[in-house]
Image (cartoon, rainbow, N blue to C red; front, side, top):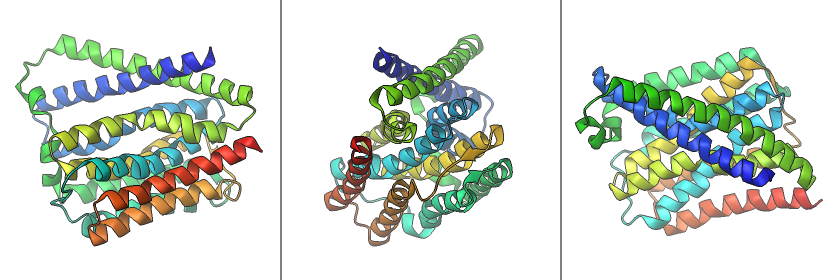
Length: 312
């Protein structure tokens, strides 16, 4: 029964996040908010909404392992699985943007910030504020290159006639789905961990992280169909920054997060490995199936390690 509740809760969480993103975009366009602001806030932050809801809910329930592992797992999955899938499926991947020159620092900065803030075993409220400042720094950085996000707006939404009542109702509905979805995702995940005799860290790292990464996967697949590889890669980088800066930052402000760095060092190394490999790929422009397989390998190593810990 817990598995059914978990599945329904995840669907609710993702569906609610999608409603919020779409309606927020409509409202932003109605008020003539720039495409940069829409892209930077809704694409990167919007696709991180499921992680945020799940992690903050876990924090409120005093489940630091679920909150942190969800973010670490999601960041690793975003690069290894989602970008790996893009490189494997897309033909002639050739981003217009020089990812290595402009974004390599922001690929590596979030993992470094995570280790620095959690090195003493706790991500405190002050650490959370520092993490939020990292997001502010990232948005300021993006402002210098706003054209990157011109293609992030859905042209079909632009053509639609704006309806205040309809948008407000869907926005409220979206938040209800997200809140309830996050609540039951965490409670059912905790019960699944107990039933399986495994740790909440592993459940967060695999089950919840896979589920909350679905919005990034959907956005990236849509970008591939529109042949907008830059948007697909930019979405993943922005989402990974938001996951650590906003999701962990906000969660830590709600309640300090506790972590054992040594005990979970393998999963942290997997996150670093995926980030470093993406920098290597972008530096050499190896956007091909070989790189995809290398990225998949990191994911498989993380899963294998988790399953081995589960069987012990």
